[in-house]
Length: 289
Image 1 (spheres, rainbow, N blue to C red):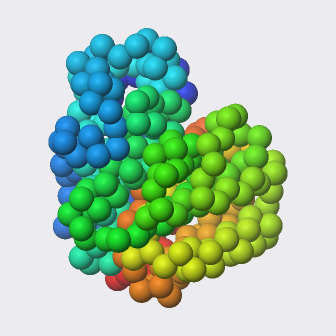
Image 2: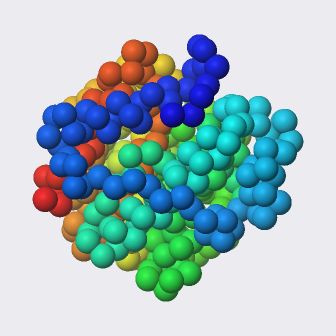
């Protein structure tokens, strides 16, 4: 685990807790989990500038960028960041061949080509899709970003790429306070509940069908939960469950592969977040057993 100062607001422990809980509850079997490979520099270059990558690897980033990322640099943090990207690359490639796969981390949608912010260093979604496009495995992709925070980095990285449709459904008054236009952005008001939230998601998916992608990426943040410390929405666990079912059902109706990343989750205590993440895999197993 990446060492953080005592009292740091990012719940790094959630990743280990999620893995252990998925195994303990029998949601995933040991053979269904694989150690994330470390993304190579050449792969990360598909989404990020060489200067930014090399300064991060060397620990020589501008302190202002480190502050915007919000996590202290360390060699272990470099390894963790490479594993986050590598895990999403592996999940996307597995999904391409098998229909579905997920990364028990990732969804780092605030990272731009030349900088990171909001606990995100490299944009694993953009790196992973870059690998699929480079290998000519896909021609068009759609990113369904349902984290409570707008996917500004993902939007910027694909802004001039007609082969990628980006949907972001997010809190209107939440971070980032300067939004970067996605293909489609939907602002959700504070304290929005299940019924209204699910109606928005259901309304927005048909435009992706019209785009006709052959691959989907689902950023399944659970910081929309009413228990989340940073979310400000009022979606229940049942609402998250129904949201996930809606997305997986949509993917299967299109007949295209889907890769899932975690996204945000900041409940205090962290247990509601872990439960939300676990639900996503429970739903995935219902559709892709």
